[in-house]
Image 1 (cartoon, rainbow, N blue to C red):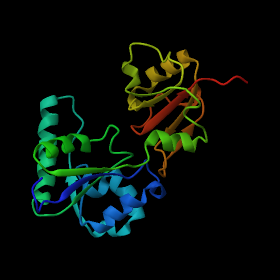
Image 2 (cartoon, rainbow, N blue to C red; image 1 turned 45 degrees about the horizontal axis):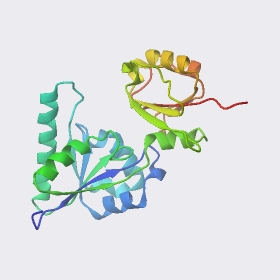
Image 3 (cartoon, helix red, strand yellow; image 1 turned 90 degrees about the vertical axis):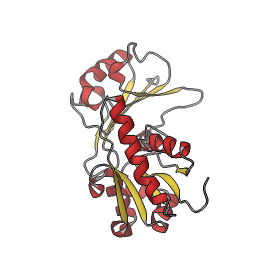
Image 4 (cartoon, rainbow, N blue to C red; image 1 turned 135 degrees about the vertical axis):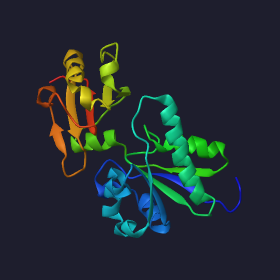
Amino acid sequence: MKEGRGIAYGVGVGPGDPELMTMKAVRLIRENDCIAVPGKVARESVAYQIAVQAVPELADKELIPIYMPMTMDVEEQRRNHRKGADLIEEQLDQGKNVVYLTLGDPTIYCTFSYLQKLMDEDGYETALVSGIPSFCAAAARGNLPITLWNQSMYVVPAAHKLHTKLSHPGSYVLMKSGSHMKEVKDLLRASGKDVFMVENCGMENEKVYSDVEEIPDEAGYFSLIIARDREDK
């Protein structure tokens, strides 16, 4: 690591409720003036809108939008990741720390991971600050455990692409399937598991569904499903 450079922090702000932000996340935002957020317009970023409720002074800090639009074009993804890493590295070279805000936890399906890999390869110092994952917050919202005793837990993105049923014993966490909810509901019905879903967990427009038949065929991107083995009544 080169002396005089700043540190890039990937900081989880939790799932949506600003009261679920960690004390460490709040401290790092307060102590540093350069804040990076995912999105084209910094103040429209969901991560920013969560964090600014807990740290109002965030509104007066230097904001760096890191725009990485969703695309299946691998080359475009790489170009966008490189652009994002370069923007952060410009600040690090000036001796500034950069706090990159991300939903949930920075180790779970996080855009910062791609930037971190590039910055690590370029010889910059990076660090991760854990946040409450969305599936833990969703389970708490439903007042239920995800697993008990020796049960397994499977975290599955895009469940509609599965070629097999949700047939393993234990609990499934299904993420990133909102736009294919009709197919996911068919998988859930076939599984025979108890189903709970939260859309926009911890946010003002939060919606809760306690049964597969309550879930609409179309749901938002921030929709998370927990499917658990049915308990003996």
